[in-house]
Length: 162
Image 1 (spheres, rainbow, N blue to C red):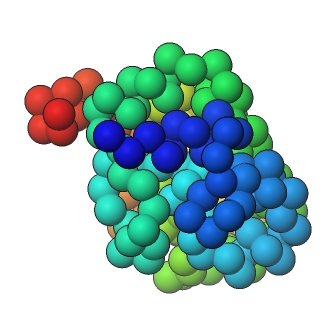
Image 2: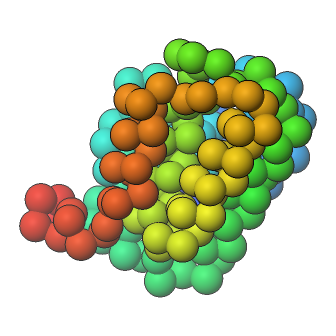
């Protein structure tokens, strides 16, 4: 079993580009915006990313290990805080068809799966408040994706993904 995502979140091993999770936490806002292959590492999912096909894919076993691990939980919460800060300071993302709208979907889904509903819902509320502050109305499709992402539960993968 490839446990690279667990080791990465535990701050024991770098990602496929040699970055430790702490390196990503230290990215500038410009780096967070312009680098496109880190989000799959700090917010893993069960689905392969079309934009970063070499990023790890969760299995039920890996997800359960992440959920049960305090260091992994710290890393996920820290990453969530970093992205909240980014979206709170930057405004270029708040426009139709921006790639950050997909990132937000990933963040919401990964946090719902691995941290629980409350952190995911708090991030959603923050994003919606920020959109309001910026005068940006996300498309109903984006909001539908975000709502669906927040409803993700690890239990739904128990049978599908062994």
